[in-house]
Image (cartoon, rainbow, N blue to C red; front, side):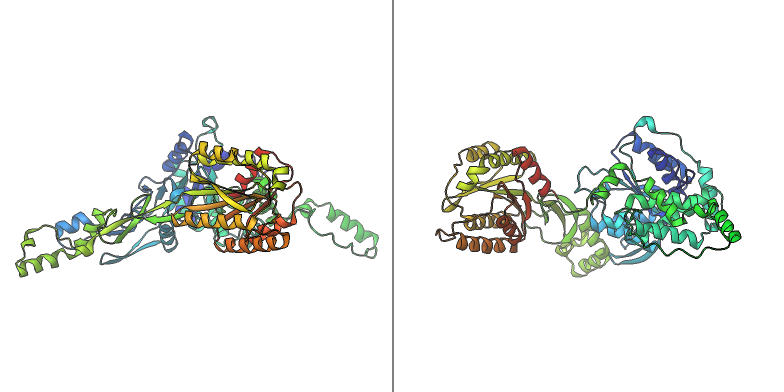
Length: 598
């Protein structure tokens, strides 16, 4: 990578360049995902983008809970009721034709809404078939998705992120780092007119596709987005041909933020066997080869390697370290255990639409959607009422039971963490005190998250429910402090008790998470008899029954050394196994919290 292809650019400069390229070709580039908190930096970037767009280009904000009728278009309720016949209205996406749609709090966008927006972006038209209407409205627009997510659970839907060329992070940028825009609206207007004439060579295409493959980008759409960005860069520079610098810039802005792996370095390449030395050429030919070897053009890397180096140069150090460790910048793994599962309801949570239904107890009538459903039938119902001589013939709006629309809600269920603590003689000898301390720390963490906690202790010949699920931190600590140690290890009974409690938690609509703290060395069978062989068989059988319920389970091996019995038990119950032979209460608590959020 030469210095001319990878100049030192500040994060704000990269953000300004991305905004300029997006302003040249909003529909072609798809859009920009802006990760930033609400503040002057984000407002300044949006203002610069607004100034670069043509004056007549619309820039509309999409509300988070926008209804499908407003998003895609549908029945104009007021006009329909006034005219007495169906009147269609354009949706917000159709109104964004030629401009930009700004989505605030895009990390909370529902997958259904994101899917509808993505479908319109792909087809470049809104297909409307609802409320007795059928029409197609062409529209081409770009999307600015404002991501204010504070946790791993809040992320812009993948279906939308895959269609946005630029993924920016403005959070590290301070107000003093901001600078004036690099281009004016006149520059962008000229570039828009010049854009259709810009051509690209096969060599550039191969370099972008090869770089995307080397960075582990699976989506076939991404190289096309990088190509659109490179063409916009050439158009802004007034050139008819995409250059290597344009390709390198597109790789930095489009490909690098999506990297999921690092390309193999030269050290990772297998050593090739040294070929046998060729016969010595004549002296004149040897001198000619030496001159060619000294030619700088021969020392240059292939174009794909130079573009790849440009993309690697823009990877932040933190991301580079995470990629080397096999972790993504923002893992998209589920966070079961930290937040409950989603469930639908009719009373609380985030509204996600409406459905036809009865006005039963707790149901919330959506008046607008009800009137919208009744509007197309008004002429027919008025005529029928006049013909029948009904007393409702003077009503302005005829609403019937079939028109009722009930608002649907979606909310996360509460999480209940069930701790199963081994208080047998072997555990009490080694780690019971540390386990108690770790459970107290975990209880405090659950209390902060307003999760419910339950506590089961097993010792002697049976497992006891010391603490039913509760949010009382004081009560939980008191139950734990009074837990004595000693006796056998009735592991099978403990697993059965955890399963029964988790099932009852699930029946209440909550999400159970089970955390076992044990060495896995069972010696008391289900029937209370002693014997390690029978007790182990019962424990493994109970573990498989628990695994069938598909709960989130974590098993912490609290023995001085990792025990094979604990590993087999974790495997049988399909639990996450955490061997912690040498750890205090704080380390134990930290490990469980990390595992429960992964």
